[in-house]
Length: 291
Image (tube, rainbow, N blue to C red; front, side, top):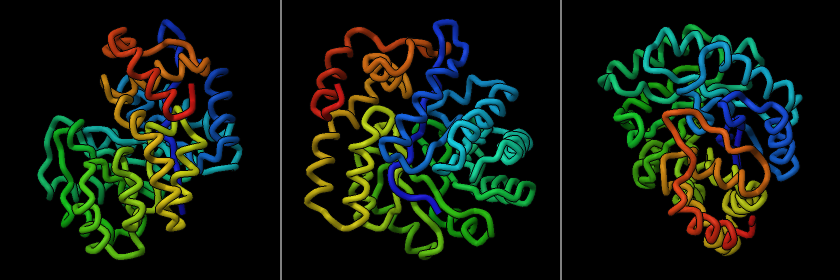
């Protein structure tokens, strides 16, 4: 259903934190022109944790209307309460999103049984394709392969964004769940290797800054052109790494500001990228050919 380079898009903001819709429109058009295959709106890279429910619903609706069906729109609808996740997912469906990306509940540390019931309850409440999202380094919650295998039997749970960077683990999920269940990388540095091992794409932070080259790398990896994929990925690797000099999306937003794509706005408790990291990120951008 979805494959290739899918951008976990930042949310452009004014200096006061208000969403900058003009910049957002231009950013979306740049991605479509660059070959990005799907847009993840209001995901964690889009600062979803700082959006209220009305802003969240409005943002997804805005992206859907701007995209006009040219590529899929996947809405980030994860929260740490099941009833809240259902509400956000219902709003995404009403807005016209093609699917939702639901991060594991953060901070409250549910058990594996709790995770299964959480996702099962959401899937039964809202008829929208669901992509699981596992990023334990951010959530302190890890959905294990055996739990993914159970969830993969539910009709509208179609995929997982596996962001641990552990390729053997992702391969285990593929083996357990079969070819009807899709695995996406959520870790840019290891995404190419995972695609060469059967993943169908990447939900990417790097694609915010280098959308064309990320899609070219994904196309090469998915077609089995290892030499071309490795060449492009080598050029992108410094950017993959330096975009995490500080917490995501701080470096990504600064890089887009440097490219003239967005203003400097970001919401507290996040701040602008510390000046000590500017040169490192500039050099990574230059190596990727996007400065």
